[in-house]
Amino acid sequence: MQQTLLNPPLPARLAYWAAATVLLLASHADALELPPARPVPGGLAVVELGHWAEPPVARFGGRPVMVLENRPGHYVAVVGLALSTRPGRKEIRVQGPDGMARTVEFKVRPHEYESQHITLKNKRMVNPKKRDLERIGREQARIRKALAHWSPAAPPRLRLDPPVQAPVSSRFGLRRFFNGQARKPHSGLDLAAAEGTPVRAPLEGRVVDTGAFFFNGNTVFIDHGQGLITMYCHLSRIDVKPGQWLERGQVIGAVGHTGRVTAAHLHWSVSLNDARIDPALLTRMQAETTAP
Image (tube, rainbow, N blue to C red; front, side, top):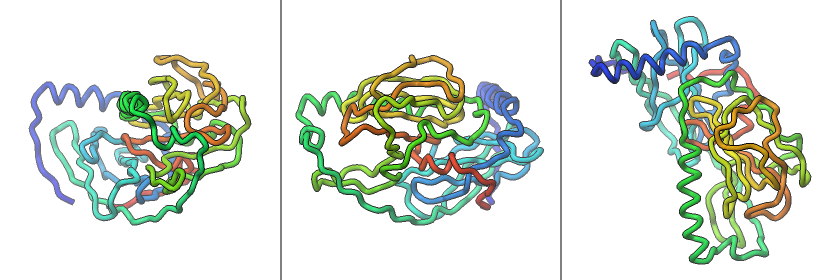
């Protein structure tokens, strides 16, 4: 473990204390139930940060990451790992209010996902027209902004309730081919619920954005705190508005078949520090940590 001393300017220290105070107030018994450590691309790492007199601030890849107090004075970072993450040694930069910084290392393991071949009758959804590409470009910027959203308060818990009770029709991470053409991996779970089935918030949070998108159809984004964002696609209707506070279990819309789909279903994505991770990791929980 490498350790250096920093002396940040006063504005930075004030900003730190504001974030740390929110984190400290948000730490409670529910946060002690940690997700399973699965440090692979598309998974997450739960990394011990050691003992700190006050809550530290941690960053991975230049982005802030979730920090929780798992026992008095000891903290862990819960780090989302994008599907594009390369296996190997990684570093988290941790800083305390006194300017002391630590570099904590952890290892990402390799993992191979299966392939999925999908045939679409609407070829425009495979090879969009020029005007479609302009729209898609605008929408992708909007989606990136929503998924990268950060609010300092920690979520009340990390266990997520399934937004619908339905079997999984497409698993997370599948390498996808549409009409024989390679496309981005599947960055969520497809849940085969019937058209019109109510979709419910899996956890308390605030609506970041909603909209009708070319590929995703009617979509809702919810911020649950400290970089935990959930996304719901292909809805038949949207029942919430940006800025609205939601309670766990509140209906946000209904299952549909809008956007690029072959049948009605819910596409559910979970983003942690702007990395899409397997939602199943936060629906079946157990306490594990990844040692540096």
